[in-house]
Length: 629
Ligand SMILES: Cc1ncc(C[n+]2csc(CCOP(=O)(O)OP(=O)(O)O)c2C)c(N)n1
Image 1 (spheres, rainbow, N blue to C red):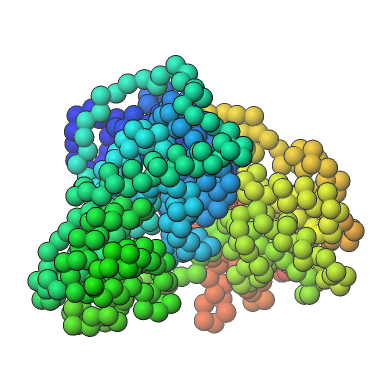
Image 2: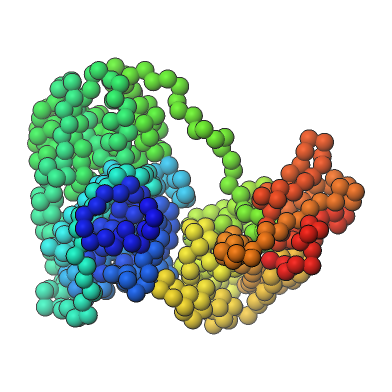
């Protein structure tokens, strides 16, 4: 695909091989979605990259990265109330942050419609848990469509937006990692083009919008009525597809990725059950499910993560007196991990061993697993290497979420507990209570600081907690692909006023603030020691730009010359601080203890030079005298 932005704006129908996330971006444009908001998190950021690949002046919708998922949901809600078809998207655990506002959305008259695209992450590929957001749908009275492929993601988004606009209710499109990142040839429709309307359609005459006691109940009644109507509308062939197998006594009810994996598993089987593939997973399409149950003697519910469909289907069978054997999860293992073909084969074999063909050994990944690690030149590495030297062995360290979570791994081993984005100040504060002998140090990244870190800081000031917070400031949201945050001086649409971390801390009443470039390791050690020696709440800002981002930007310059350090073999006395304590992956230790530098990995930042006790590391001769990164 030559130019993603141009492709997304094509007027005539076309087919293209695209990611599920790219298919969604086109669906947003085709459906006339006018406002899209998000907070970055895997598996969804490529939706934003696709939309942002369209130059701002040509982009037919407004997009923003909000400060967190709750604000993103609120901005999309406000835009929809004003008549603009809106979409908010974020990752699975983002819904926990958004929840307070999110659960209210169905109580409103969303004039323009609102689709919430949720990127669930079975297998916890890049999340702190595997949470199944179908549970939230029940609490929030929102229908959930669940595509199993990029083509379906495209089609279901269009359906979700149409339903949402018709009924003025929010609709969830539940994506999962492989559907977001899978590629498929998708047949797209036409797009007429068109400008965003500036007419304000905010109007409260359609019913109450402020849920004060009696109104809250009336609003709930309206939400429930809409949900059940939407459920009936979606109980159709468009979302409930039956595939005939060779064994008509048995059936499988499934949805999403498990459906695709099931097809893969059954490819070589000669005893294949019928399949009911659900595109709508909440509310349960009762008529389609009932018909399927009545037509079979045994039905297996094949669903990833929790037993959401299973519970609903068993209840339906009981209520309607259907005589059928329903088998869902057989053990806790069935609730864990992604339903890849291997996993589906394993799960299905526990119920129907004869249906699952004998598969050879599990497909092995072609690459050996490698632990994640910080990039060469990462300021977080310098910071951890230094801070480790400032801490006593018994001190307690609290991790937060971001690239700096990798400080948990050897050789730094810092950050001993982790809950969620922005938790570290609060959790650290709790750990500091009745704790006279062990100092507490919490870490937080700058995007996280703005996202959910501020209330913890306010609490630490308000309640005089005794801990040191280290803000690992690299100027970007590095872990999810370098999205701008409020401190970056840019937003998704261009330059914006940077909100300085230090200024915010001062404004929040923090009295003890120190800051230093994370590459100045000696100074950082000194500042952390000073901060920890104080009673009360102290903050150290360890700042260095994300070097992956910086290097990528530099490489766009045709005059860019890649630099590298080298190890003087005459001076090196094999203390191995560079490989064992500093741990930059550019250093390689041979079996005889010789250390060399891989020039393909090294970026010549020189942050390692100071770590060598015998000064054996230096810039390569040809790079000396040049500008330092
Ligand atoms: C509630 C929630 N939203 C989004 C994410 C995805 N996510 C993981 S780390 C991160 C931000 C990291 O940025 P920052 O705090 O600046 O640390 P850095 O990676 O730059 O070191 C995000 C958005 C998440 N884990 N949880």
